[in-house]
Image (cartoon, rainbow, N blue to C red; front, top):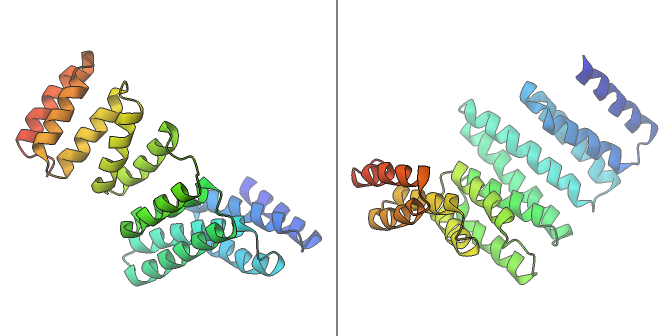
Length: 228
């Protein structure tokens, strides 16, 4: 198959240039991106990580990719009901993303990945320290694009304290975007803060059209306690 051919090509490149960290890295990335077909690919990526760390121990991207492999593998084991194995892999994933940040603390992407993993594995208590660190270093993540991304990962993990925080900031950054008000209203609703949810939904409703209709339905649902 096409995948197998690409794999052979990667293996050949590594054999020809065993000291090129880039070849290992590209192969790991490829395996991580195509793993849904087969979790063995993640195990293979982690074996590559062990080898490449010997060649190039200070490349943050290596730890980045290894962290992804461990995160996906952890998710795979969680779905199988093997929670202990899953927990171990999640811890390793967090440790590797931590190494990536320690080696280069100027990359917003690394912090975002760390935060996404912390949300997903229910360790959101550690999230604030990474936001603080980005602020200390003056990394510019307080933009609509970046905050929307980070808010999405909180939504996926149902971390509503956090979606509330991010959407509050987004409504301040761009009050003209009704979606931010809708998401803020939802955050309040899921947290059981009905009055705030209704008040915020009214703001979304002021944009008229569909938002006005949605707002009415939403307020009825909130009053009936449907989100709690």
